[in-house]
Length: 73
Image 1 (cartoon, one colour):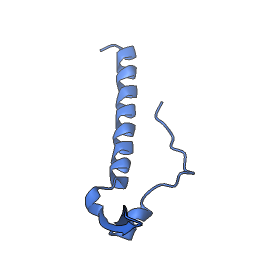
Image 2 (cartoon, rainbow, N blue to C red; image 1 turned 135 degrees about the vertical axis):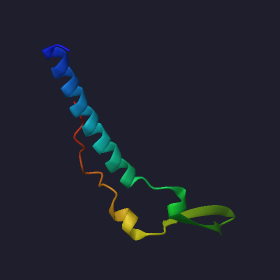
Image 3 (spheres, rainbow, N blue to C red; image 1 turned 45 degrees about the vertical axis):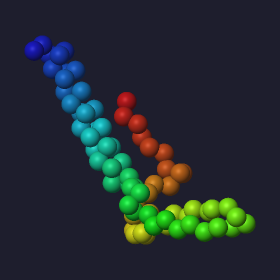
Image 4 (cartoon, helix red, strand yellow; image 1 turned 30 degrees about the vertical axis):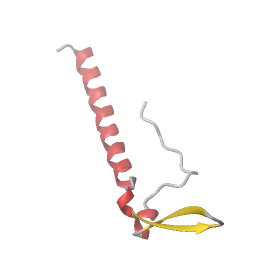
């Protein structure tokens, strides 16, 4: 392997590790339908579904819309 190839390989490994870390963080924030309780009621003859999160601590893990994510370049 030449020096140039070695440098490119090292750079790709760094990017790969950064992407793995970002993926792990996103998986922690992911919610599933089992995390919610579903309630339905009828209002004026229309069904209204409401979903309420079971564990409020899961909600606290979610990022704010104001947060900007640094993308891997």
